[in-house]
Image (cartoon, rainbow, N blue to C red):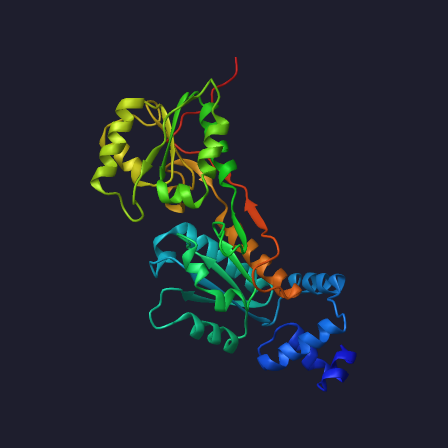
Length: 346
């Protein structure tokens, strides 16, 4: 750093800040210093960076910088509407605070906040990394090039293919497989799966793949029931399709995502869990103890997203990575009264 400072005619402390992309150094000067550093062969000492990370993580931190979490969903207050999203953000905030970072929240579709202005605000607020969540398709992240091209970035909850940023999500394949295994262990043999088509497409059919992998000759596969355009609350045709599906295929259990499926079953006076077992693939907080399902450990998703961002900051990574890396969080089975007790071996 002393050699770089001498070459560029600035203080060593300025070099240190510039190499960490600190906005307290003007962008033009930062770029100049970084080019000189690259030409001189400067590389981060990974051991020192790791040591500093460990030191920060084991003591109460003073403020280091800020992270931005961007809600890409069309609904502005999605955190209040979906408890699992709230868990993501709680985990992210807890981990950030523990490591000395604050978290600022933004809504991508705010009409008063165009992308370029948002990027300028990030520099002004000393934001060092960005996490996107609430993605319904890739287009919303594609339009954010002024952000992800300048700041370390990660997507939370799903994988984004274009741009191929690093991501943290649930292991949806394993989640569906575990849910079906739990049903089979309780004697259910005609297991169906109910999904919103847009979610199945966004998750690249991982729930369906886990469902198919789990079911053998001992557990009959039933055609998938896809609900179309059910993003807020079901339309009447969704309930009609569900009734037709039940009458035609006669499942004795189903795995699903939407809580209103349970309401539909109760309206038909079907005995739960004896006539029909129900397991949720993403058990919301409000249904714990009321229904069985897979807890997707959303708080850990948020914590891991924060760790991912801080790692990128330490390595000064920005833009689309050379290859995309994903971290998948395992789910945990949560028993509930919507399934029978496990069958005891004789």
